[in-house]
Image: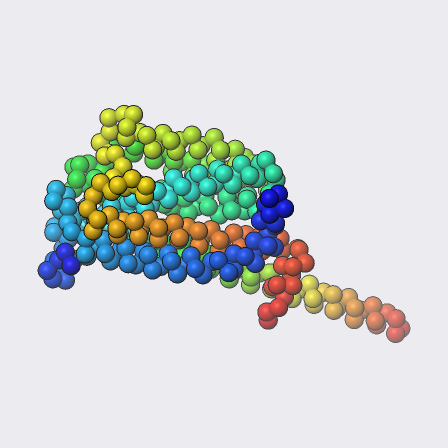
Length: 72
Length: 246
């Protein structure tokens, strides 16, 4: 441990504003990028499933309407 | 060999293989960055001249490495796309650009913050800082070009050309500290040569650099997979894959 106490660690020998700003910006980028990648994947899959359901419904409805046509 | 390259270029094959590889890179990224970060912040000794502000090196150097490596990777992917028309390379190049821009921004930002206590200024128009700023604008240009065309193929080709031309900036960044008299010091970190700093300062930096590379690979795999689903959404294997769920 390079520091004697938690408060000394937080103070960074008087360089706290610089050290924590640089680390904060980096952490924000990494977390933001990771979160975005996850959200993007979920969004894409949700969108594709919605489209697949819509197409399945369309196929079913056309089948029903042609069946009715034959019955008539 | 060629069969292998074409297999590698097949989105379906890549989607399957990346699913198995990706978790390892996520685990490596989280573990290395956490260990390297805590080590660098709390356990590495303070610099005898800079005191604790030197700890910024553990985020500044990995970000600057990535900023340049991602650009080279993006230009290489653009080259593969232009020469062999491999769509997968273009998808990878597309998802790399924003991460590269982010890394460049963090490298510039953490450098500016570090400059205040160390140099007494947050910005100087010296060769290293200016060429890094140009790198940032190149990333922004590549991202903007992709959005500026109605046809995807034109956009991909324009972005590839800009990346391939812009890669000339990378050696300029690397050698700027040697060619010109700069405020920025020459490189203090190298994987190949003997470290210019004590082991207990250098090891956490090595972990951070490896962690950032793992993070880049994990994010690129994950986002390329999303891009594959998006662009290949009409393909049968994608429909079958997505249709499995509710």
